[in-house]
Length: 234
Length: 220
Image 1: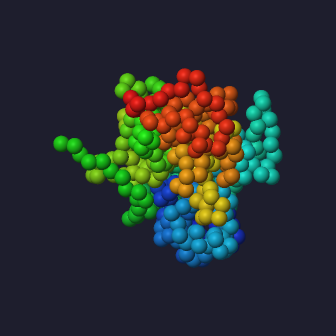
Image 2 (image 1 turned 90 degrees about the horizontal axis):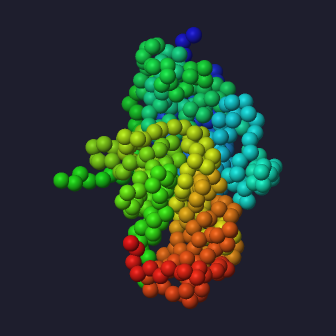
Image 3 (image 1 turned 90 degrees about the vertical axis):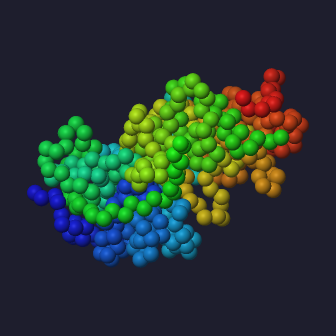
């Protein structure tokens, strides 16, 4: 079976439907599946529920799906930096569910691992805990959170081999490995395609079992949200 | 005289101990990294998936794949490691991070913390703040003692939505330091030129005063 597809449009063929739930990896604009998101926009699929830590910026990343009003609901931990988001949310066009970042990550991990729910201290005593089961363990109160599974997960990795084994680079890893496990279908986009045997099997981050297909993206933009540097001191 | 932003960061840096794993929030907490005491080695965690966060990169070493939780470009160190968001919050939730230093809008006398949302304004989200205050062993909060209109921010009860309940271990303001002992706030230090009477006037929370109240001449 050949997991390598020619391009993002081909990779998405036959997996999209209106009203579906899609996970998208990335933290801010770091490690986002930028080509797959563009292909998603061009597909015209609508009423999507998107699970992603953030929602891109106005004109890049998931933000471009807001411009075309393809997103019905976002499940995120932080959505600043996006005026279109603010406008659509305030006008009631866009639904939003906030999850604490660690709870969001663990919900994906649990979903991918076949765990329907777990207890966490995070959010106890806050609005996040409202309506959720509370349970005490050794005198400490926890709330029940549920695992998440998506119809489709879109992830970004640095390299893939033919098997779909993935290796990420630096902090571009973030949510990608857990989301790769939690998609009924998972599509990866990578910067480099390597031959079988090029990876040291001990160094693989995501085993290919989680990856249904992958594409090799070209001309990555990788915009930087906040450029901070130091000066060379002579 | 009230402490400046840098002096607050300097005071917070005194909480760092050799060998600590530390998470610094956005804003003044980030400045704490500039005042790590000599002979103290700490490892900074960035909750987007990195331990051993280095300083901002030189201009020709900027890497879009290497950012901190504030989305700023950073650099790596010889001891750095990278991991997924799930692993990152496992180490936070699991109590493996020794210390978090975070900003706040309000703190209450029972240790409640509000720092993520003002109803009626656009809500941006809590990011990792709720996980950090729930999971990190010691939570140090930094904030101005009063709001811009002079109203107190250290209150009997927070009126903004909470980030966590009973989570504050140490509160450092621009005027004073309070330590939560058995969940009760104790005034332990005063900024230079600030007296206990001024703190009383500018604080709504009920607290006790440490018999060995320390009056700072300057931050050491």
